[in-house]
Length: 167
Image 1 (tube, one colour):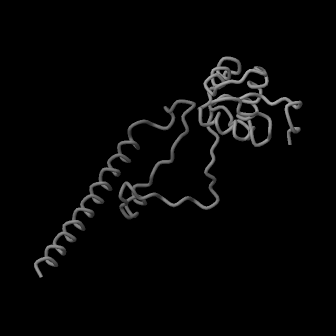
Image 2 (image 1 turned 180 degrees about the vertical axis):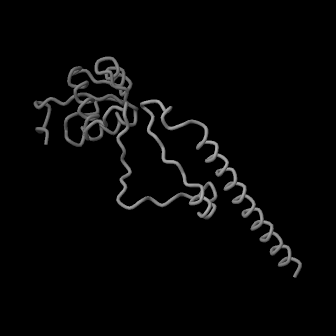
């Protein structure tokens, strides 16, 4: 009996706490919106910065308060990929394996450790590649019979005369 009363009291306290948090969060966000609306006119924004829509205060007040952890649902038809200015385009599929193969081929018949492959990529090609990516590329190339593991953790380019032709 005392246990259920204590449980009910804890649930009521938690509900009051959640409501107070939601109300405080909504009030804080409204204050931020008001401050942002009158802080800087839209014409004074720098040229490279995209302009943001102003939020209608009446419409914002009509929406239910959300906790900070809740996320808005995505709009229908909206894609997740956005082009961002100033970013290099993503490399094509298979680029890492091709780069690792080129480094091993240029050092053939010498076998290289992954650290040597990484250094050569940085020095010769200007590409910074993680060891995990190098390891994955070596696994792909080994599956195609392009490279082989020579000794303890070293890899060498497999010329066509060493074994079966690459697939």
